[in-house]
Length: 485
Ligand code: TXE
Image (cartoon, rainbow, N blue to C red; front, side, top):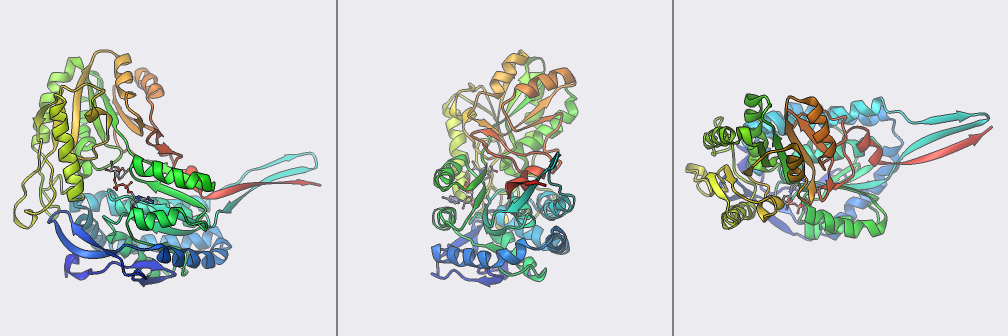
């Protein structure tokens, strides 16, 4: 039976059980491709959060005293179960988020099991530091924090949830996760896989609900020792204002307005194909998408014509269809935000070269939330369109003449998450990469990911780093023990 018919009420996962919200708050859960309500999700209250924290606190002693090998064995098992149920999870993610099935199959769900395997493998080789001097031994203990929370967004639901939860669990913590209320389904399916894997009750809890209700109850709870958040900058600022005075550890992966710098000496065909992906993948709903495209003037006209022609050929359609390149954006509210940003760009003097409005997709998707891939030129770098995150299939083009100018344009926003840079001149690549204000710089590529690398942003794109040792170190406290003998 298609998933749309089989899930009516999504449940919380607390103390190893799948449970309804205690005070009966429910939110409608929409299918973006059709605009129809297909299930309901808990809008959990402080009482639900309290119950989850108590379950996690009860589980913490046993879980934190297990060996890395024992904890890793649970996560390897969960990864195997994700792979076993791949097609169901792919269908669920596509239905819940609106992304094409093929993208969920190629990226989201495989990366979710990889997240568990990568970190499980990493901790098996985890090291600590020790220093010796005459009659003195210094050794660093890496101790778990206790009960922690992982708060994740709707753009890559299972991918970003597991990216946070895996290292937190492996380092011995017990987790209260709050997925986005807009895309709760794969988290609900993951809860069922954790039960099947025999994960001890209370080690991992999922409390669904809105940010203002459930989210605030979580971040304000004194029993929560650390917060890892991915989402919008505005929400991140609020969370920081609540969490910092409680002296909890905090990791913030926020928004981006990423530049894509294209020099005339680049590998043109590879750049063009990759720039289409970095502009419109996941309907432009990836914090790493390159939404500001700056092109050296000598190839600007050719690039603009080729890029617009290729953008026009992208198929916006039913996420279930193999030929679909762009599915639905995640919600009606978000669709209206994106369309409003396009109208604002026109008012700011932008020239729409292709797209520029909603996409009409007939049949079962006639009520869905679709936006045409949109390319705009003729704007200044200080206008709102080039300063504010749109988080949809909308990019702007602008020529530049000199390297200095390209770097200044790249750095001309309050964000600093990632950047792409296209040139065959590696001296220039390193000069520019050193000066771009970002946490990640891709040279001659995009979304080339090695999970061992530090991942995160600067300025209003966040605080802290995820990935590799950075993630493992975030989820522990280091204690130096100095032994004189
Ligand atoms: O994010 P929110 P949304 C950007 C993008 C998007 C904007 C808002 O520009 O338009 O953020 O998107 C939870 N206490 N990105 O609405 O509000 C919320 O329930 C605790 C970039 O999704 O930040 C959800 O689980 N939690 C981003 C999560 O925070 C709270 C990806 C994200 O919600 C909360 C997605 C609160 N007070 C959007 N308020 C990226 N960097 O990839 C909300 N939440």
